[in-house]
Length: 253
Image (cartoon, rainbow, N blue to C red):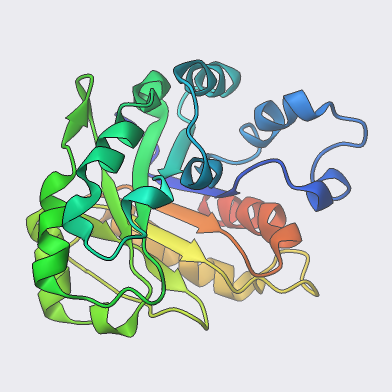
């Protein structure tokens, strides 16, 4: 799908007030912020879909306002994941997947299923949920990412179960959540959450270089794989600067 581009770097959302004085040009109409951001970054993780249901026309508009090769990751609606019995999530999953996300076409990146930090790993609870995740919508293949936030998921049993259903687990750089690593995953999904307000690039430049090296190793290794990296939370006002600095590290010399 993207032969020359395998590492996608971005931020969470694009309508954040502090970005209007340190990322977006002064006076830029709010309606043009997505168009601007999508030409400085290569991906955006959409948080609004976690809280609300959007119409097909909205996804189509996002597709049309962004350049070729840009990617959207969508956080699935919380009603699918924030429940005691995950096996009962079928209707919520179908409603989200059928809400028009296929309008994004080849700009549809992974779907992120985010679980509450209190959700504990229980294979008997989790496997029925994974079995409900569709492989495609309207002929468009789907990539599913699990954002699990409890230390009980840090076990080979969980990673093997997720892999069995073709799901990738978020690798989180955070003080609050476990950092799970699955070297056998068929693509990588990274959320970097330690940006510091005192640093214009959020993360120190040498550390961004290390993340870039890791991303390139995945993207260009023996089994080339897509990599999605998002700067999110932390000092959010620094997220665009961090993403652009990482993209500079990844740019061909």
